[in-house]
Image 1 (cartoon, rainbow, N blue to C red):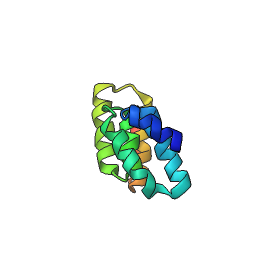
Image 2 (image 1 turned 90 degrees about the vertical axis):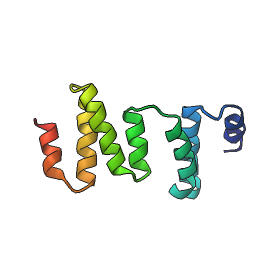
Image 3 (image 1 turned 60 degrees about the vertical axis):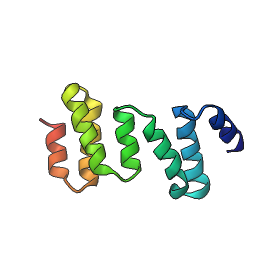
Image 4 (image 1 turned 30 degrees about the horizontal axis):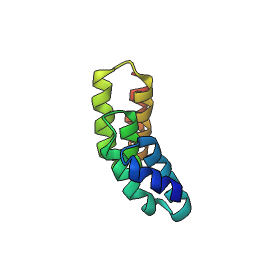
Length: 104
């Protein structure tokens, strides 16, 4: 983690390095230690499925669902977005709607 910290001092917006640091902190010290790194990563991630996944990992499920819904409107045939939305719906206790998303 020390070398990664040095790297991030020089390149604070490197998304891959921020994700790696978040994962390392989660492994070494638990999810609460990863949170600041995930927040930094989120601030540097444009609207995308990756951003929705980050929002979900941070416990912001409704924000993640809203992001996926917006992305689905822009690219309605992207099956990855359907699957992501279904996972989020199941996690939030709405498996019926999740089935409808997967079988329109």
